[in-house]
Image (cartoon, rainbow, N blue to C red):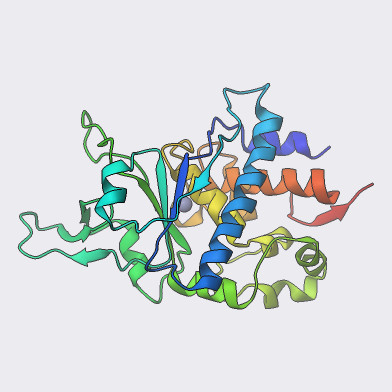
Amino acid sequence: MMLKFYLCLAFVQVVFGANRYVIDSVSCKDDAVNAAVRLYMDNAISKAGLVAKILAPKAHFEPIGKYVYVDIDNRSDAWKQTRDKSDLEIHCNGDYITPLQDSPEPNINWRDEIQGLPVLDDDSILNIKDEKTILVAVTSPARTWKEGETWPDNIPEVITFNPWYIKHAVEKKSIFNSDRIKKALQPSLLKAIKIKFQRYTHAANVDTLDTPELTLIHELTHTALGGLSRDTGGSKSYGWYNCVRLKDVDNADNLAYFALVVDLIQNYKYEVDDKGNLQSFT
Ligand SMILES: [Zn+2]
C-alpha cells in the first residue's frame, strides 16, 4: 500500500482539538459563512481523527479530544474572562488587526485586538488584510516572541481566513466529497477547479482536492495544541509536489496531505501515487 510511503512523509506527533471553538460573531456573521465554517471544521477534525487512529500505536499521538462550539460574543467581557489558551477562535477576516498609534517600536505598527498583543510588521497575519495575497488562512498560535516568556493563560489561539477565500469557497460550495473526487479524476478540470487561490505553481491531480477542510487541517497543525508545525519550505511549503520533495514531518502541508490521503484510502478507496495522481482500488 502507498500508505507506507506517506508514513515517511509525515510521522506526526500532533494533538488536534482545542476544547472550545468560537466562530467570530462579527467577521463570520453571515449565516451561510458561519454554517460553512462549522462544517469545514467538523470535517477537518474528523479527517485529523483518522490520522490519530493510524498513528496512535506508532507515535506519541493522542486522539482528538471532544470539542464544543461556544455561541458567544467573543468580544464580550463574559468571554474574555473565561477563555483560556486551549480555546480556538476562528475569524473570517483580519479586521481585528488595527493600526497602532504611537508605537514605541519602529517595527511594530499594528495591534491584534483579539489576542491583545502588538503585531510585528513582518507577521503573516498582515497579509490577510491585503486583497492580493495568495495566503488562504493564517494561524496565530500560542507562541511567545522571546525565549523564557510564557503565553498568558487567558489568551486563545486564532485561525483567520482570507476573507476572499472563504467567501469564494462558500459561493462555490467548495467541499471535499465524492463528487469533488470524480472531478479531480478528469485532468481537463485540473485548471478549472483552482486558479484563484493556487498557492503553488505546479499543481498535481490531488491538489484539486484542496478545499477549506485541507486548509483547516493545515492551520490546526500550526496551533500549539496541534503541535506548532511550520511551513518549513517558505513559499515552497505547499501542495503535493513540495510535500513529496520536503518529506518533512514538521511541515504543515505534509501533515494536512497525510490526513487527506488516509481519508482517500480508507473512505473512498483511492490511492495517490508519488506524482499526485488518484487511482481507485478495490
Ligand atoms: Zn502554514
